[in-house]
Image (cartoon, rainbow, N blue to C red; front, top):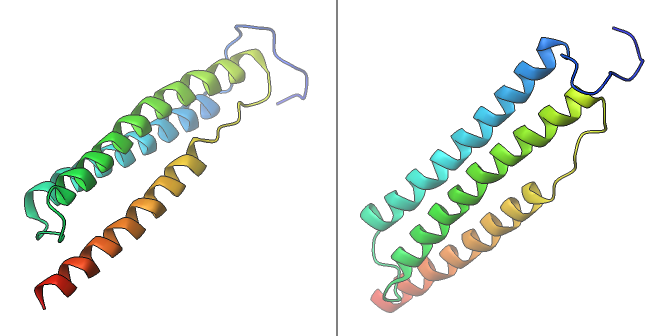
Length: 121
């Protein structure tokens, strides 16, 4: 493969397109896992000491799943466009946002579980 920039709209090496597709599928799997976790919390988690906390945590997880799915698709489009035109790959702050959101949600869930345990015992 040469180091010359590609003409806009030319077909790239298929391995890059397939790698981009695998990345999209990873985003989709993550979104499905967040959706399943959210539904699982709402349906199967014990009471969390604060009325409506289970539903709030479950809803937050499902909403993170929505953001993850949409972001994965947008990233797939942007990377595909960059691959075809020879431009630099687009950056994204969404992994940071997703990770920070999950960390905050995990911390809040820990506080709720401890508060629930202290109120029962």
